[in-house]
Image (tube, rainbow over all chains, first blue to last red; front, side, top):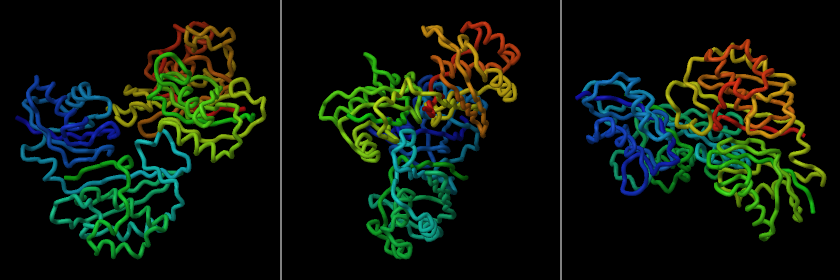
Length: 245
Length: 245
């Protein structure tokens, strides 16, 4: 048995999310199906760095799996992509030490979130950016982002459904680039809670439109209450960009 | 009755093409359905600058239609986009003189063609660029493009199925931009024959990979025979970008 680490990109618009579930097409299911075919029907389980929700994309999701096959990277990539549907692609497969774990060994992640600000909807962006055709003060958005960087208890920026106890995370970087009618947010941190990036984006957009004051961000963080923060920005703007080990 | 000119963008990946046909979803059908709803079920016919094939995209298709309604541009755009599916969008609607004709008055068009040259397939580009993961001499491609500019009989670069008599057209500009793992071709001319852009791209790519010599392009043009040129590049890379009047 050899352990392999794979980097996976997927267009989330046709999936009910990453993780296998009773109803709906999932990324994990498609990956395990393709691996099963390569192993003559034998079940091959994969472990990912984390889940992504329905409609959320990945450019650099990381998985690991064990296999009796010994193939070089390009052969794995070619064989798996030949078996996978067009909306998932293995970008790289490397042999790693047998104790590598895609989830537990992840030391950090980068997510991107794309917002389209054009006044008329764009058919090419409907699955790949959140449409926000409202007047926005980008300087206020940037100030809000500075308040969100650091080591904080992010309970207010986490879906109330989460049952994880420790909600302290470190967000080391939030960058915001505006180009033409797009705003791209980049978040890097040691870990992100459920819906955390989407709630941070929703809150920053609310600051940009004047619904929330920049000055209230520290109080929102300190309040540890999901209802204090802004709305959850939609799934289609979110990309799991890179996972660090 | 007032005549209106509309600029339409559509993601061609979910359509069997622009023009209404017995089987399959078409752009024209969706537009006429939405206009019908705005006119209490009365049929409103639209005329486009030209057809696009299944899978071909448009950023600036132009249509005209006549209506008893008198609305300002933003109201038309808002009302129609509220009735249209997400993969079509009216970008602009303007009142024009009653003899304006989207097809007969068009004096020229710009098309873009996007080629993705990365070695591993990209799920985000599968519907929006042609995948060409082969070694390419971009200088040769550019030289080939220079031979295709001008006023020529483009019979060799036109689907053999076309029954149009006059195949002389003027291509005034072909520009080629390479950025990271994408090559974007931009074509401007007074008119394009059926499949002409896709055959020009296919031929230029064949020059880039060495299958066709740059020096043979003039003879391919002079031969007026479709079988002399390269293959027809796939639909998903093609965008009707702008129509001039």
